[in-house]
Length: 78
Image (cartoon, rainbow, N blue to C red; front, side):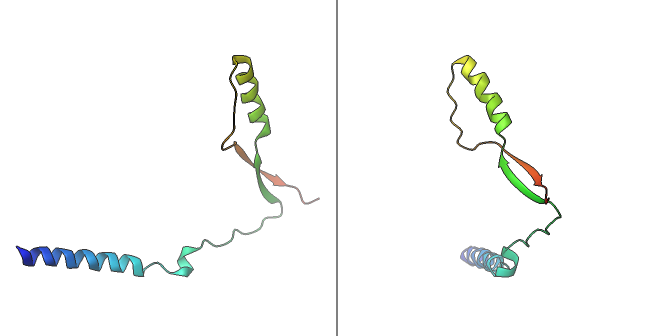
């Protein structure tokens, strides 16, 4: 029984060691996205925030944005 337990432990160590060995610095980083003619931006969705705050005010509720909603847009290069 002890032989099978030690064999299982050895197999588990081998699996863990190979998992750590396959992570390299070149695979840890994502490549930079290709730049498009229009620059993409992420900004707060102020229109949605205003809508939610307006409804909350009517109901007597205070709103504190911890993670404000975001939207993507393309900035023109003019």
